[in-house]
Length: 137
Image (cartoon, rainbow, N blue to C red; front, side, top):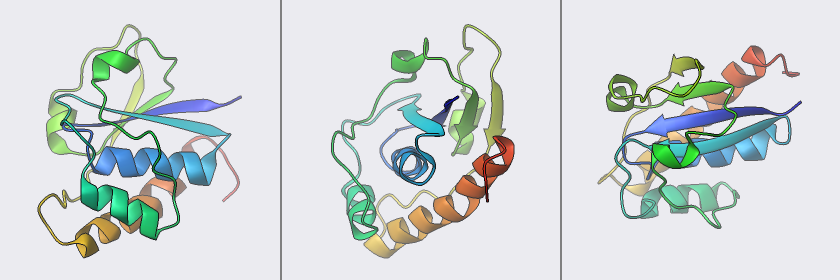
């Protein structure tokens, strides 16, 4: 059965978007990722889109979403990727397991920073989800 993870950040414009794409690309269909923000930005960061494209990853249809938009999804795990989202993580209708896995915010930095964060998300988050959901390493 497919597990659903929510990747939560403040702006939902960079780290959580990259994590959503990576999880869906690397672990789909066993794991389905959604992302949202506690205070979503107007658009996904150009550096995040470019870093994903450089990695051969899909970027179609990415846009920042408010956490309210996913509140009624059947979520198995919440992953907060920034300290602010951890502090302001909303209360969901039912208790949901949550882990905090912070990543550097590359906003305003060169493309290399976005690529580094993309690779760090893949190196840390994907193995964690495989372990947590008992998927083959």
